[in-house]
Amino acid sequence: QVQLVESGGGLVQPGGSLRLSCAASGSIFSIHTMGWFRQAPGKEREFVASIWWSAGTTFYGDSVKGRFTISRDIAKNTVALQMNSLKPEDTAVYYCAARMGGYGKYDYWGQGTQVTVSS
Image (cartoon, rainbow, N blue to C red; front, side):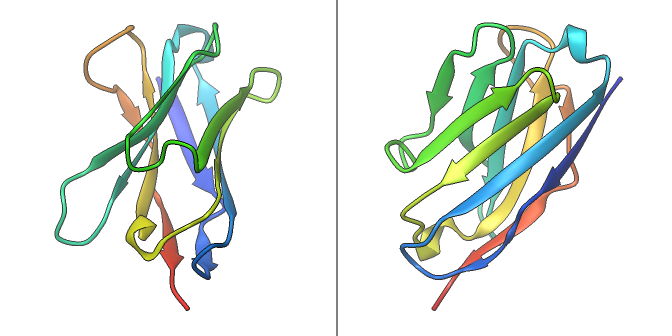
């Protein structure tokens, strides 16, 4: 079992920055990939970014490339999402997720944190 807790959401103006954090606990050694997803009202859940826990290899959704950066701190069992140049369309609930395998569905999810980009 893996438990995930997100933090760092809030209200930010367009063009601003925000940093999300996800604290993982439990069977950390079994994690292959950590990811961030988001879901806006009335829209499907969208892939944002992911990172291979051991190798640190990163992947990004097209809508956030060049603006968002995912990173992990193995010593602290945390994954961060640095979000820069935020746009109103980035407004969503952001979820942290963990995948035990190298591909396929994610196995564990956090409760989500709200990010609102508005002037």
